[in-house]
Amino acid sequence: MKTAVKLRRIFGLMFIFAVLTLFVAPEIVEARRGGRSFGRSRRSYSKPKRQTQTKNRANQRTRNSQARASAKKPSFGGTRMQSSKQYTSKYGTPRKTETRTMKNSQGNQQRYVMNNYGGYGSGLMTGYMMGSITSSMMWMPWRGAFYYSKPYYVDNPDGTVGVYPPTFSWSKILFLLIIIAAIIFIVRKLIFNKRQYSSGSRSSFG
Image (cartoon, rainbow, N blue to C red; front, side):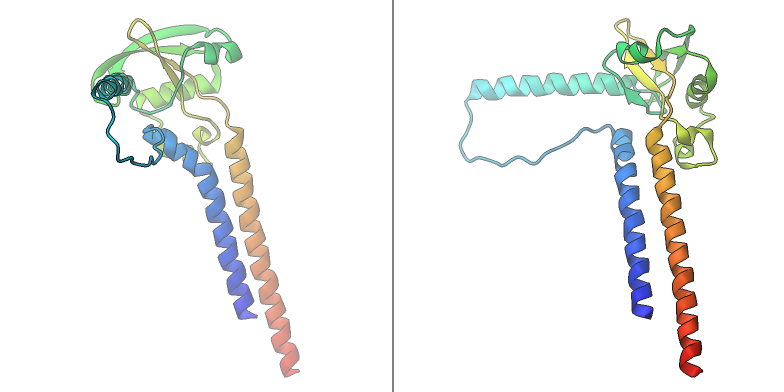
């Protein structure tokens, strides 16, 4: 009986760990922003010199582009968009815009264009940029930031960085419900097994 209870506990913990990994992994990848790296097999033959030089130039341009994008990245992280149309096509034109000069993730001064839509999301955007809301608050269910994504940003042609409000995250609601359901399931199982073990002990001595 005790072995069965221990096994249920182990499987319950493994289930919670799997769910946490499923939902947390994308956030970790987004926070690192390092992109994906895939292993490639090495070949023994040598490539032509001209082809190697062309590839090196292309790699250098890619690294320079990534470095410029990283230099403009806001200090709070966020999700980078290819263009502002990705946001405005779904949420419309902002009510007002405001330009502020602040430090980016590299500690350098950068001009940001804050696109305000009003409402709670725009308040979160301002909080992230002012530093009153930290990334850790995204994992505290008693904080409003938990139920929203991070702000979105895009590199504008004029050198500024446009910032857009975070959006409501249904995946986090599902994540919270799964965790609550898993906790209730484990607690009920433990209580049931304890009662069953107690009744079995009494009957054996009766």
